[in-house]
Image (cartoon, rainbow over all chains, first blue to last red; front, top):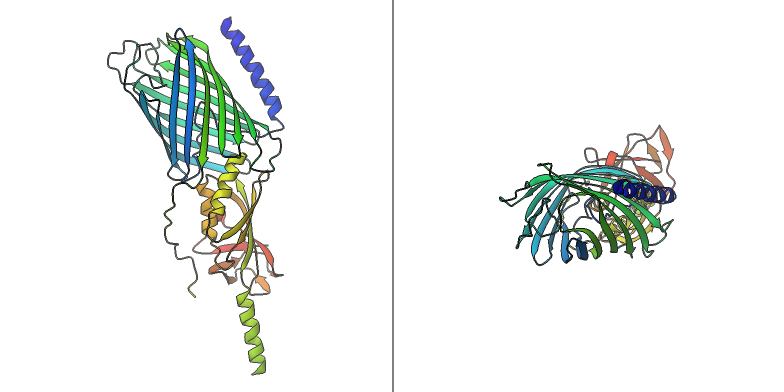
Length: 273
Length: 148
């Protein structure tokens, strides 16, 4: 009953956002997941985030992340919370663009290397408490007033002693909407975006599942800096995770054209004079 | 001899003014201002571009040039694609060295070979705005096709 109450709140929120979004445009700069799109080629992003996690126990997590895009199709992230390291890379292999819309697909892989092991749980923790390999597929559709993204991935926990299974699936479904401004006029306008994301995990053993909901609000300043506020809570929680609620704040700044371009010599399409 | 000199003068003056005044393009695949700014920054970083005017809402960009005789279409295309997006349409306003555009005829301009792709022939009124009609703005066997 508790689950259906939460689900009805979710559907109500979703409906309000959808109706509101009919006059606006979509956004795919998700707070809790990556879209299939890649950052602009040769750009660098610095991100600092803080999460306060609560549940049966409580903990804090500071994370610093550096993101690079080597080309229009390939980007990498390097992150640390000072107890673990994370390396993430993503390759966009499909892109179909039209005015105000696109369909994109990308493959991703990430490795989390934790220096200390968390208290064993029957789920796979992706916040730096455990060493995990994670890879999969992202499909993102932007269509004027609608930006949705589906991420499907496999998980492998590097813990041979995991009694509850060390492999599973991670998936998310993300939606984003631009609430303000209604009409773009300058890059200086502060943008306000709303996001609603569903994040789930199922272990192969079938012993543990969760489905979290994560609403978020995002402010974009000068079309270059983002402030993200998000709250994540479980809709379904068949795990013994020590923390399952998470309030997070993050700030990131994008440096365009930060990596110098190595320009190849033009091909011979010029007329010889 | 007098007519030869006058003819030569007109030939030289028309060649000297054969240049691209501006390029207008509409980018596709984006709605957000951060995405638009990525394209704006990439276009502004091109060494032959002097100014980029943008209509964020319409995803359209208008480019002016420092050296109108050194415009490089493939670099403009690459800048937009590297930012992560595509080009829906690209138009070019230029002074052409000829007064008539005839289908399938080649015209040389700022180091490029262009070929007219239109029905029959049309009079050129300089500065003439033309559309590059190649699919995804990629030259076909080194040729860009123009229409107006």
